[in-house]
Image (cartoon, rainbow, N blue to C red; front, top):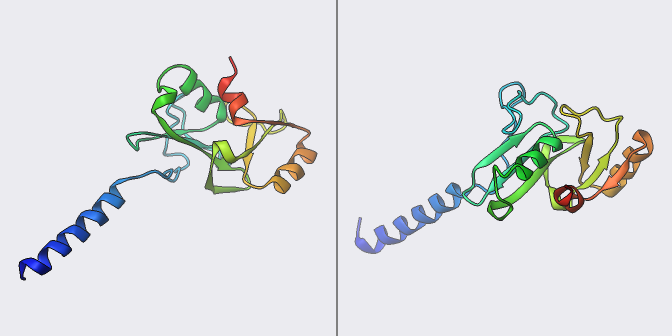
Length: 148
């Protein structure tokens, strides 16, 4: 192969490798196998999981919003090192939502694994329907993150 053909090929390989090595999306949670990075319990309920992706693209997995917040507030990760926090869509458990864009419902009727009792929705209508059924309250991600 001539040099004029090799260089574009190598550049294309470099671009593909660079793109694939940057993981800014959450990793699938494997129920019963993955453990919560805060409480160390096996993640067993598909409706309440979450992940923090740090600036080095490492994913930390959680079984409940209680654990996500505990992990952040304990100082195990500094807020400045967080690239994104993703939460599981309560109605579509294999879909993640950026926490800052999710509609959060707090209700004691939810019975999440660690008692956080917060469900996350990507759609306001679905959120409102669930709020009527579960008699909960809306809470924002910023409120949770900044609570003491």
